[in-house]
Length: 78
Image (cartoon, rainbow, N blue to C red; front, side):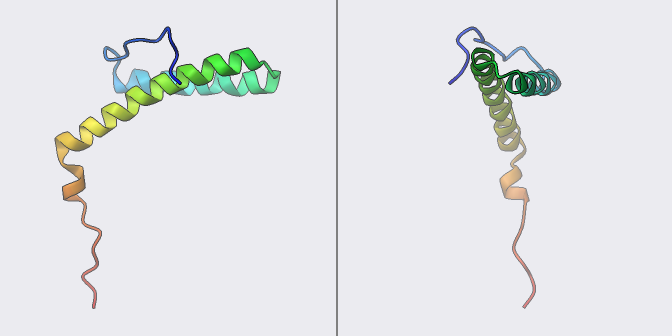
């Protein structure tokens, strides 16, 4: 479930998304140690929002660069 107050992340760069995800995960670890259930839920929703945007960008990069067609994992050994 995505966070209801995080609506548009399209203006953020990949680096910004990555830094924010790292920061949110550190805060989530703290919330788990503090056993703060409400904060944990809010952080998990925010992380889901940022992860969705990050994965969407990665998928777009793969499609743009035709990554799946460039990777050859077949073996030529007989």
